[in-house]
Length: 338
Ligand code: SF4
Ligand code: SF4
Ligand code: SF4
Figure: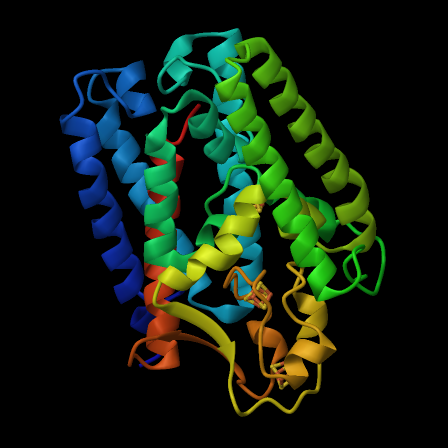
């Protein structure tokens, strides 16, 4: 059935309606349970939380509607991810410069993903973010690194701005060397946080090191990712990305190349996470850096790229992954603040 209602395909309205209800339902406890209002609009005016829940649920359903169409998905993903990241930092700026109501807890920390790991190791507290992070991995695999993180959207944007026609490969050649580099950075980060904890290092020193780590990351985004057209910050430098690359296998979702692949290599240039190469395509194996973003789907004329979730059809698995990912993304838009 392809009938239209206000230009919308009726057959495509079921999933967005479901996402609207799911997001709304998930945000109700956030509105009514906490003693101190968590939703920003509720902090601004009495009853505003309900308005915010309605707007965010509508936003999620619009995303779901458009992202069902593969040809629209890459654009909508990039825009919504960037919107979330900008909204997150906008609130932080307002929280610092105008009023603490724009901050979640009032406790400031350096807003870079590495703090999700280093923070709890150093302070032996702030486990909430770790629990949240692991939960998203269980539900959506690596969607943290394609829809949910407040930082990676800038690496995506920068790599997109590359002026090169051809996407360059990784600056570190060889898969083995890339893995060694990624895990070395993860080890240095956690080792430093642990040493600081053991020697009772000062908060100032920890903050200084976190700022330095963040500045190097921004430098990589602005230079290497921009020049190469590939997301070097996310696929090589960020320790949270390294964890996501491997921890994602605890989720039952998979993104894979099926037996219809002709090794034509058309999909390779679409992947900014460097998860596709001539070699990986030949082996019918997508690299661990894949975030299931789906940007490559339209480039394959043979329908050889697909999602998998237990015994669901590839289309069903894809829809389910989108529903879960967009729902979590929308909930993050509503509540995620420093
Ligand atoms: S790799 Fe790091 S910066 Fe990139 S999206 Fe993942 S957590 Fe965020
Ligand atoms: S575009 Fe499709 S057929 Fe061609 S290499 Fe990629 S997955 Fe295989
Ligand atoms: S292989 Fe496809 S789904 Fe995986 S990261 Fe690359 S573009 Fe996204």
